[in-house]
Length: 293
Image (cartoon, rainbow, N blue to C red):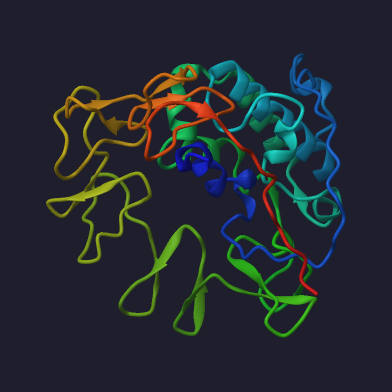
């Protein structure tokens, strides 16, 4: 599968825990009804009061967005919800849910313009994380506590099964005698420091917020549409350097047999083989999350 097709899910998986390891102590099978119309009447008709309800509604809403915008994140059809990386029902029951944030997330997915789909599918999926990130559904176990799956630990930790299952939540970013959150990095003084925002100095390590470039010592958003590219700092988030060496938005929905690659993204259910560069039927597989024993 074309890596651009799945880059956003590694930032999301509801942006909750994909950065964790991929172990799970429970082996419950996730069963999802592939109702592509579940979001048709808006979030008021969806039960967002439970983690399980939100996960199912999120899967259906994301598949509907994928189909509407030819985003090529997943194939269309009944298998789509099952291909959205997300917790099983059993795992979702152990997580905490912010119902208000969940409603905002689902409403935003339903109203998102296809003109902005490049900010969801290509490069850094910050728009999707901003709308449906870990503030919606998140693990409840703190560092040092017991965990059974990748979804159990709080945002700053992951589940380590080294000493057997159940595992233990350990820090993602150890720093001196403490640990940093995902919004921070560990600087050379072993202190947690927030990622640098646009217009601020990058520092010697160039620690800019994701989606920004360190250019001449300052964090910048990069080059805009139709600006010459091919050299630093590169095109801004959601853009690519096209064949004419100017920054462009990707073109989605390229048909089977048509040329693809770079800014030309094959339609849903198609892949762009790296050696042939013509859209061909894709072979899809459900994300594998092996149990820990």
